[in-house]
Length: 195
Image (cartoon, rainbow, N blue to C red; front, side):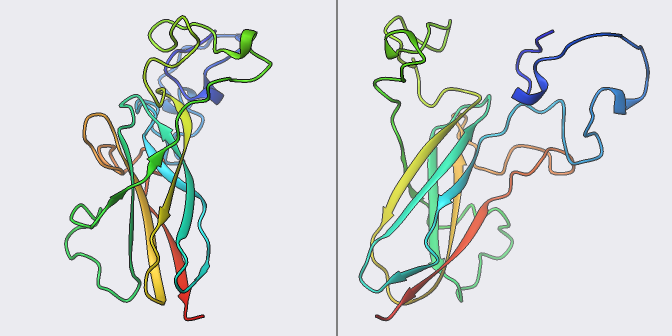
């Protein structure tokens, strides 16, 4: 049995018996572990590489990954600010912060020898006849992103990243927070040294 639009590790099942029940645990193994079976995959960003220290005058190289949910992925953004600066009051998701755009890395031209002619197989609505994605990033996939932040003054900084989906909704919205899995805006600390 294949269940479309479910998380990858839940989508393939081997049925041996079927039981009818009213117990919610039977429908979701992780029902009490902050999971939402009715929620489509979320769109969110995470850091892969974020240096802990950077020398004065040097740019700050950042890389990350983003999960693209059913709502698509339009932008990846980052926000670097001095650690001692007060955070915006009453703005728990930093909607008024000075977010800057990172680069979503483009799809490969050749996808490797495991695919015929190094092209992705044609899939309706996703891959064209030339083996290239019709839009990028593809829904329900992970994609890479990167940015090179211009040098900043010595000091301690906080760096955050987030996504904007194709509906214009910024992470962590619009998912309900009482039960929808982790989707918080990630934060890393960076120190720019004087020498």
